[in-house]
Image (cartoon, rainbow, N blue to C red; front, side, top):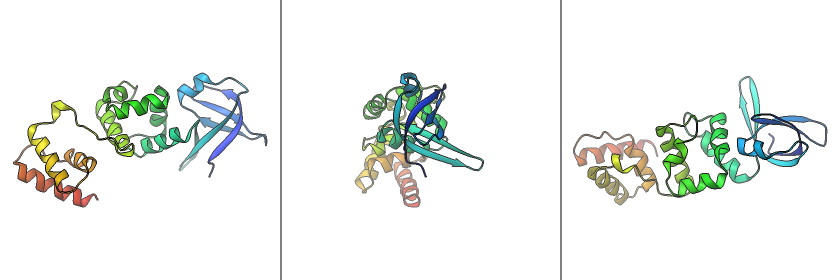
Amino acid sequence: MIGKLTGVADEIEANYILLKTDGGVFYKIFLPAIVIRRLKPSETLTLYIHMHVRENEISLYGFETKDQLTIFNILIDIPNIGPKSAMNILGFNPVEKLVEAVKAQDGLYFSQIPGVGKKTAQKILLDLSSKFEVEFILPKKSFTEDDRALLEALVSLGFSRHEANKAMERIPREGKLEERITFALKNLNKNG
């Protein structure tokens, strides 16, 4: 497995480069758009690498920092987000802006990225929030008094806010509070 590569940007294309190493080997490495725009031909660079293996293809994705690689790995673990979508998200703005958006719980930041809808933006925010140890807050318009009571009940029963929020995504909106708590407890117990 390839973890890190150093070489010269021999050819720069729209979403990848050919990196020439000292040994004369050329690696095709996909990079976030924000990195591609800054690169100059013949520039020497060191990249952290994610090697993505599929049935008929091995692709290399490169990152300037370990933080970018870490966020990429979190993103590709989210359902319906593959490496290309993750690169699109990382290439939208500098990674610091993405981190700020997560800490500020700014779902609009993610929904502005081409190819990312509102639901996907919320999933990304939820997953990144849990990794950054930031509390995820459901949008106010879909968070009723019963939802707040349910969330607080689950937290008081010893579940983390993140676990409780995840369970609430799957709880029916109708029914008495006690029924919804029972449903949530069954749901939480099945998934962890």
